[in-house]
Amino acid sequence: MALETTLEKPAPVRVIANVMSGYIQRLGPVWIEGQIAQLNRRSTSSTVFLTLRDPVAEVSVQVTCARSTFDALATPVTEGARVVVFARFQYYVPRGTLSLNAREIRPVGVGELLARIEQRRQLLAAEGLFDPARKRRLPFLPQLIGLVVGRNSAAERDVVDNARRRWPGVEFRIEYAVVQGHDAARQVIEALAVLDTDPRVDVIVVARGGGALEDLLPFSDEGLLRAAASCRTPIVSAIGHESDQPLLDLVADLRASTPTDAAKLVLPDVREEALRIARLRERAHQMVRALVDREHHGLATARSRPALAAPHRHFDQLGVAVADLRDRARRCLDHQLSRASDDTGHRLARLQSLSPLSTLQRGYAVLQTSGGDVITDASTVTPGDVIAARLAAGRLTATVNTTDHSDHDAG
Image 1 (spheres, helix red, strand yellow):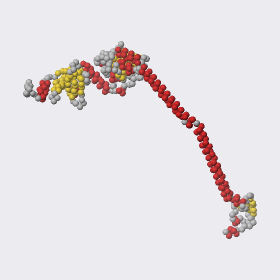
Image 2 (cartoon, rainbow, N blue to C red; image 1 turned 45 degrees about the vertical axis):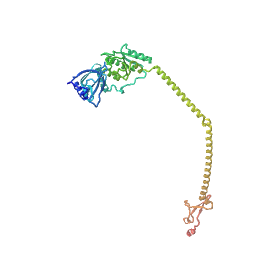
Image 3 (spheres, rainbow, N blue to C red; image 1 turned 180 degrees about the vertical axis):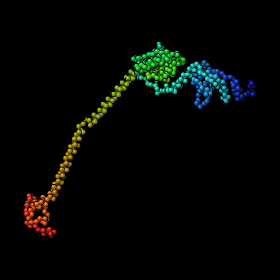
């Protein structure tokens, strides 16, 4: 029903908003095609928010979609994908915003291709084919470079010419292959196999010029990606321009933005290396000269020291010290010998004073029986016994005439 309003009786905003909501709800569902300009997929929300943009005019519309509907897509879609959406108009009264509520989403055209590539990327990433730990370092100076390119292509000229300008002595083994179309992936796989089995090839460059997304599809082929991942030789991907990113870029050991860039990444520049060597040689000369100068200065300083200026002086001082020690040793030895001699004389005198011989020399004698026993008591002999008397000088033999025990008895 028509809404009647006047200047005197205007309708409140809520009334107008409800009327608009009613009008919009009576509209049927529509099919709409556009490109996903923004994609907001929050993990905590059950709703996915999209912004569909018209690729020709600067027009966009907001689309909401149930998360279950979005996740049920056979091929995931990303920003930039072209899709066809079946949706109903939806007017949110509290905010006064108009949007579309999607019931179905279908990728189409380039968007469908991008969705398939994205699905393949997620699958291979889950298998670890893009893991940075798998990537190998390129040799510093490859002797033979394998090149996979289209025949008589600009990519071949860019790689070869720039490589030889950087390092004139570099050699190539070129395997030609179709680089677009349904047979391109198979031919590139065969070329990779040939170069990978050649032990002389140090690195393989796969190069192609720019083109539309459909032209670059062979370099996102799953068979080609797995073949590249299984190669033992390091691979450089140089497909298209900076903005082109086929999945081969993720599998390769190194990505070059263009074929020309591949030549710069694979080979050093002979002029830069010669300049670097000259600088290193000059630095080495400077370091050697500085070392020699430092050691020369050290020797001059050492020679100026007294120990080296008059080396005999130290020996003279040591000689004097040795002579003093020798004299002290001699004096000590003489003193020790004198004391030892005096001590020996004293001990000898004492020994002599205690010796029985000295007693005998004073007129005493030692009497012994014929058996050799010392006689200390007169009662041990009888008259007629033969006894011996030891004197200070010589011996006497005597016969006992009488014995007297008076002294013994008195004692």
